[in-house]
Image (cartoon, rainbow, N blue to C red; front, side, top):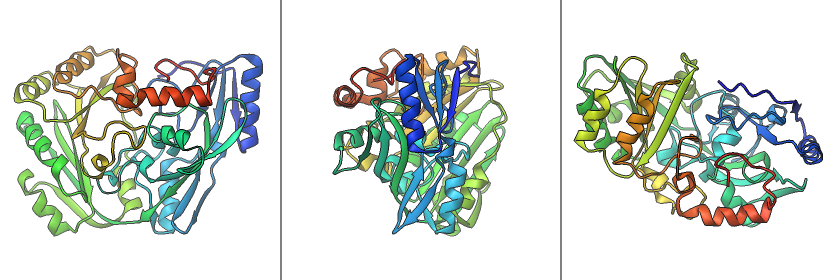
Length: 388
């Protein structure tokens, strides 16, 4: 969908390559943007200037439970390598998503209700600043920059070249999936939003509904019997498959994208949608339109909103409105749900249509983020619409 063509794509295989790319951008006055996975909904991973393709920064190492990952590593590769070490880092499902972009904007996934956001597992970051300096960030070194890199979104303060995570033992998972046609969608949504955010931390169950029916999907760190008991309210048609390593579970949900030309808007919710709002939303569903609900709560919400740059620590769920590009339903549906919403928006789902974007992405953390920006990128070398 992104038609912008860069003048130059520089494939970076070392930190010095990144430094050189930034030097060229400064000398020419052209915009420079880093590209990891290239999945930015707002097209921030491309430019008509210089793209720093980080795919060559692809090293992964594991030592004493700490995982060091190059900024060009994609999730599918990371999960497979961590499986060899029987370790895991909580993250998203798409195998082609870049670990750097996912982490810098937060990182929501099937282990998050137990282990937190991907950025909550971050213990160190290497980043190249606009002036070419290479800095190491952690709680004890450049702590304000480290704070900002955990959840403000990618490309804001510099080019991240590697990340270090405190991993967890790879859990054995139970896969959860159910599909229904001809079901009462309003009743299902109402039941899900009252149950899923309050489920045990070990269980993440998400929901997608459309005109053709509904899909319940997720995972549990509990056994099949215990998981089935927890899901009894959703009936006997829920399919469970136990004994899957986390990497195997991820692969089972990594279906190829069937409809690439999509537009999406989203919002976090700190309380349930009212019955009238649910009825209005499902009543306007037709072919190609989808409401997708992601359960939050659990460990996500046990971190203070100011502890990291990710401000959305009281959310019960995330709701995405998805349809074909050009469908006016997306904006209308977003406005309907927004009446009950928190106003908060996931930084990894940038939305060019937002009006008060600073508050939506960053909440009360925005002023502190502005101070970090002034300290580390005072001339706004890294600038884009809705950028800090």
